[in-house]
Image (cartoon, rainbow, N blue to C red; front, side, top):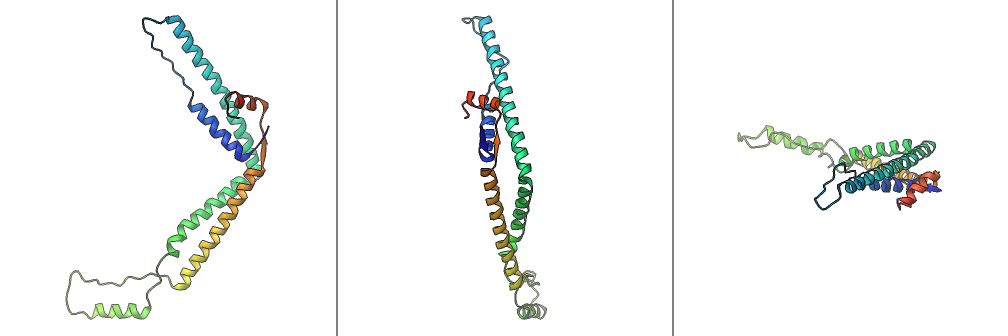
Length: 186
């Protein structure tokens, strides 16, 4: 049975959910109205059945995982994901700078500093500094250009990854298909 990488991911999620649902109780409570030997046998049978189901599910999970890994390697998915992660880092870094204010005109800064230097009152609470951004309009435009470029590249990479995940298929082993059918996963 062939499945896309996208479907393979969904199968892995379903297998992990099935694994979480398995119960492995090693103790049993028995009251005076129950047959102790029968209760112990039933609990052990259930435990052993769930161990076998777990083995089967784990084998299916890692069969799928191995084949997905091979397909990802063939299609350079790790490289695409690394490029995507780098673009995301660049977006996070440059976004605040693209939204920054432009620096105050140098004449205004000089005037404010002169006013501070020549003030006559000695106020403890008066500002003795002028704050301004270091970025001029050209810097801000460059940051916005970077962001737009990074967003386009990110979208292109995401589209390429989606295409790879839908286009690329893996062949499930018949034993894996049997396990997934017996567990009502497919």
